[in-house]
Amino acid sequence: MSLEPIALAQMAGLFARLGILSFGGGTTVLAEMERDVVGRGWLSHEQFLEAYALGQLTPGPGMTLVVPIGYRLDGVLGAAVAFAAFFLPPAIIAFAAVVLWHRVGNSPVLQVLKIAIMPVAAGLTLASAYTLGVGATPRTGTIGIAAFTTLLLLRTRIPAPAILLGAGMVGAVLPWA
Amino acid sequence: MRTAHGGPHERHFEPHGSQSVINPRDVDTYRAGTFGQTVHEGPEREIALVRRALLLFWLGSISIGGKSTPLLFEQFRRRGWLTPAHWLEGYTLAKVLPGPTGVSGSIFFLHTLWGPRLTPLLMILYVLPGFITALALSVLTIGTTRPGWFDGAAHGISASALGLLVAATVRSLGGSRSGPLGPVLAALAFGANGLLGMDLLPVLLVVGGFALVASWPRQVRS
Image 1: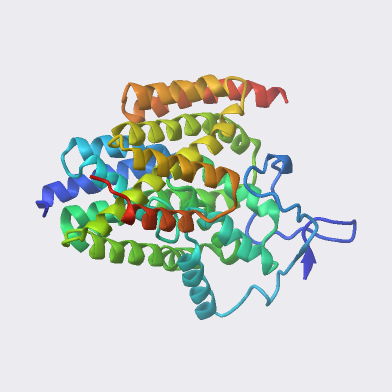
Image 2: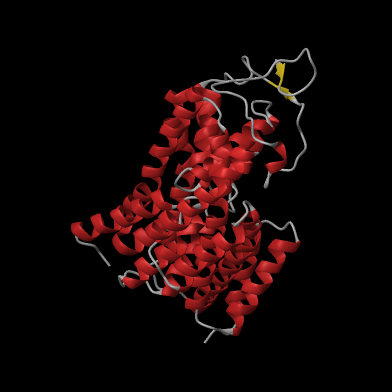
């Protein structure tokens, strides 16, 4: 799929909006992103989930799932635009805030803001898990691997990328059809 | 060389800002208990620009698994450049700023260490490996003819990623207990954005605004 310039601008606008709205961590906007991207017919739900998985396998700050989404839409240009659109606006805001913070000094207001944001962020993260889970095709393999991954992550110290790669190896030999 | 938290003869290290006044008990991801350690302020952290650039590129390359901010901080802490107080300040600030926590947290740490002029350049070097890797994986896996086993592996990794999100959700639910109405606000945000599929902006404005109002008097009283 190759996007028209207007559609590319729409994608950039969407990701910039989501980047700026992602208070409390990137995963809080996953539900909204899934609805927008799948709703516009840019990706199927399975492709979105695959992009999320790919994003988890890459280093650096999370939410690099925008790169495979952008790439699927418009190749390398789409990937670069999606990445810049999602990360640049909040990075500029964060930079300005940090500069100001270091000049003004610390304040209890920050702690109040955190107390206010944390429950909302928790609820939005739950909404993301719900949206991605409900949309997934209900296969025994999917449910089993997802449940086992959750268990491993909560009960052991095995790094997430190792679990993802292990799940990939299991998935390669499972009969999915 | 100075010490960050300690006895009466030790001074506080304040690279580009003030020390944190945040309660140390509020650390929800960092539990090392390493207060009172040595902090380098002089030439030890004033390494050459090329070394800083290479260090950031390297750290950006190895921080796989969505835990980039703690890993970045830990590397700086081990070198004696930052203290857990900086972590508290940076992590809390990152949580209240828009955008991925990894980005705003890293900007805080880099700015604290090396000031505003170098932060943008070092930040680009820090996120570049992630972009390159994601792009390379996209080129290799999207739009190509994939064998059956490869599709199966993709299904497996996708299912595992779903489990990863569920685990992250379980962990984040602890955050919903902050504030008197925390669980109610979390349920409202989940119901509006998840169950009803409402747009994020009105949810953030209404539920977030309500959360702020509910939290404010409690802090003022304390």
